[in-house]
Structures are given as structure tokens and as C-alpha cells.
Length: 435
Image (cartoon, rainbow, N blue to C red; front, top):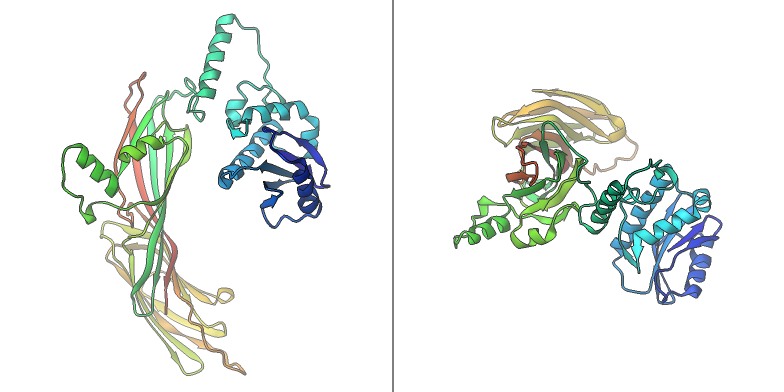
């Protein structure tokens, strides 16, 4: 680890192995830091890889001669900066480093061991490194309290649940809120054919649970449903309409990946409060709207519009805050439009008419009809006809068909009953209708 200031001076360094090259480190200082050549975050010099980030007036560098995982290294660097900021009252700069050399070296010894990241949780480090803003006034305690605290610290350090401290959280009402949020991305061509459609989703959880609960969470994932059927002795295949195909799944660090690899059950001990449990992508989605459009250029000074948008979801759902961005030529002089519902506004700077529909129930339709008049130009420019864009929010209707099949909460010691709430929200992402 190397720390440089803005003047390319090496403030401090900490080497965890003996295979480093001081010649390469000096070359990096001259060619990158002194030259302020920060265009590439990864630099190879003398068979050594330098990965660095800039923060305030500092350059924090990780040096390795191995084929290390670059994503892991950068994640460690950013977490390391957050650890220092938590100890230096929200600041991390040259002055903070020079004023706390002893603390910095103590933290560097704890966050990494022989070149392998260990503890990068500031809350956990503050339990046994009491310096800086983490300094605590400790009253005299008997040996029993000291031994108990020592056991808790050792358990936290060596255990796998650094994000939740045992015995810290107690609630009268134990509740779990689960939000499944999806952004739908669609491209439809001029003939109304769907060219591309997928959704990016995330599951956000807010937990108010006592003790150290263990949550088991399951979705209607095809692979997971098939594994559960096989575990019950059934050889019947899961139908295509019975489940979803999750792609590019990422989890919060609390999720036990070994259990997920076995039977696709998402098992974890949640942090207290709100956190992002997982993200995913699904390539097969149901389009929430059908858009019919007739846009004709009449001569040099007029464009006619006839656009109908129809909600394709069930009648007991409704879309909120629907915005339809209808493109117009940049030299539009006036707009004359009538709509069956909602209101519209011409945005000259964006060359579009924004049609706003507060609510649109499932199965309902709305029409946008009118014309725009164009200013005369000395030299006519062909209109590029940008696509119509949609923004919306549909509660309790997942475009991908994802469903939470079960959510179990167990606390071995307290054995309480918990209240669970699940909500689905589908938002319009990059939703384009080409004209």
C-alpha cells in the first residue's frame, strides 16, 4: 500500500510481502503521480500492477506482482478510505494521515494480513481500536465484563456476521419490508415489432428484527423450483410459464452463497435497517403498454400526430405518473394538440411535447391528437424522427413475472413471530417507440 500527496511525495507505505519492487514504485511515482497522468486506473511497471484511486489531495495505491482480481482490489481501496474517514471525523487527506501515523499503521495491520483483505468494517474495527473519533472513555470494569467483551470481539472478528452485532437489536414489533423494484427497457421499431426488451431489478429490504434472525427467501426461479421438485422426488419439468430465468444476479454480502449454489434458496442474517439484498436482470418481460402512432409530415411546415397508448396489464392495476415524450422538429413554431386525458406541455429546449397522465388503469387507453406548425428555414433539414419515450410507475405489477414465493424468519433464541410486507414496483427505464 502506497499513499502519495498531490506533490508526488510518498507520505507512508505498508508492504505485506517481500516480493515488491521499490524501483517500480519509484517509477510509478514519477510517471503517474508526478506527471498527473491519471487516465488509466491500472498501470503495469516492471511486472508489477499498480491500482490506484484519488481522494481529496491523496493518491491511494495498491501494488501487487500477482494476477489479482482488480474488482476486489478497487473495492478494498474504497472500503479502506471509508474506514479512515470514520476515524478522522469524515475527512481523509494528507493532514489527517500525517497527524495519525500510529493509528494509520494499526488500521493497515488489521484490514489486511499478508496481502489478503481481512476486516474493512469500520463498526467492527471501532470495537477494539479506540483512537481518533472512535476513542471511548472506558470505566473500570471487573474481569467478567472484560472477558465477555473479549469473547464478543473475537466472535465478531472470526465470524461471518460483521454487519450485525449480537444482542444489540430488540424490537417490540418484528417486521420485514421487501420491495421488488424493476426498470423496464424496451425498443419497438416503426412497424410495432419488439426489438429488445428486458428489465433490471433489485430487491430492497428493510428489517426491524430482534436478535440474530435467519431469513430464508425464495423466488419463482425456474432452476430453484426444479431443484425443489427433484428434492421431493418429482421428475416433472417446470413449465416455461411457471417460473423466471434470473441473469446477472448479485447479492449482499450477508447471503450465504454456498446454500444458494445448493438449492437456490437465499439464506441470510440481515443487517438492521434498509439495505439492497440483490440485483438481477430478466430478459423476458411483458410490455405494460401498446402504443399505436400515426405521424405524418405534411409539406414543409406541418406535422400531424395521432398517438394512442393502451395499458396491457389487468384492470385492477393502474399506472401512475405516466409521461409520454413526443418528439417534434427543432424548428417548431406552434403546437395544437388535444388529449382524451392528462395534460401536455411543449418543451422547446428538448424538442418534444411532454404528455402527462396522472393515472391510467389497466385496459384503458388515451389518445394524443393534433399538429405542430414549423418555422420556415432557408435550408430545409430532414427531421431525424427521434423515438417516443415513456416513463411510468406501476405498483404491485412486476413486468418480469417475478414473485416472492416465501419469506421465513427464524430466531433460534427468541422464537418470535414476524410481520412481512412485500411490494412490487415497475418503473419505465429506457422505453422507446421508434417512429
